[in-house]
Image 1 (tube, rainbow, N blue to C red):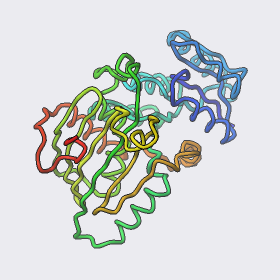
Image 2 (cartoon, rainbow, N blue to C red):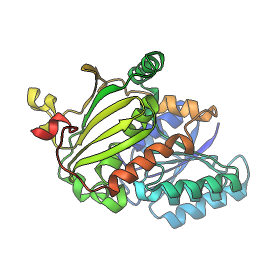
Image 3 (tube, rainbow, N blue to C red):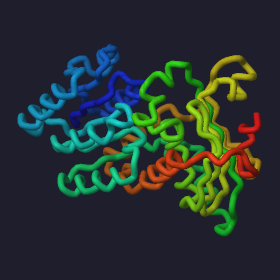
Image 4 (tube, rainbow, N blue to C red):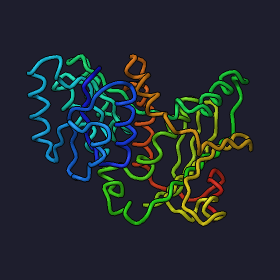
Length: 314
């Protein structure tokens, strides 16, 4: 049984990590978040120490390190805002803890190089949450593409609409410097998935870049991809059908539609099992997607053209 600390424990994604830690037979002993709406801890770890200040949290986990192997932090799960990931990874390394970090590990590709150096110096590792690589439909798609004609280039249309209210833009997620923008915050998993299945990026265009939606085009080794990301509920075909703000995830491959809105239950637990067994997704696994989100963020939109996603014409 390993000891876990969790940062960003009051956030949206944290319950999946808390559940995965406990389900895999481990214990949560310390948690950090500037917000104190953390009653969920009573469900998973009623004895865990909670800190709203990073300085006190840091002091506590350092004290545990000096107490000995039985009480020290072995793993830190990072669920904090994107811009804090790098600092929290470094904090974990200082107390000899390995890390499971939500996407993206960092906002800029050069930060990966620094973390890789620290891995070498400390012997600790940082592992990323790339749960789409564990989704049954995505695994089946990768197998199909791998076994298909190696010289073929697929026509792909990726649509991801995850409705969010006005709060989104008022939070850290709507702040470019803190989240990396929409393409980073909600798109990084999909860019990783695409490059994992269809190969390296050869060309990238950004057609629309707005606070609530963005769209563009990717030329990959095995595919041409038109992509569209949005937090506008009116964009979702599901919303138009039943008047509810439902998430819509669809990949169209040569007009063959792969809908994978379902199938996400338990993926964090599977990822924890894989990571704790020593076969998680490390820095080199995330490097292509981190480089791509940086390039998208730094690109000026060129407007609608023949490579644009059909939703941009609405």
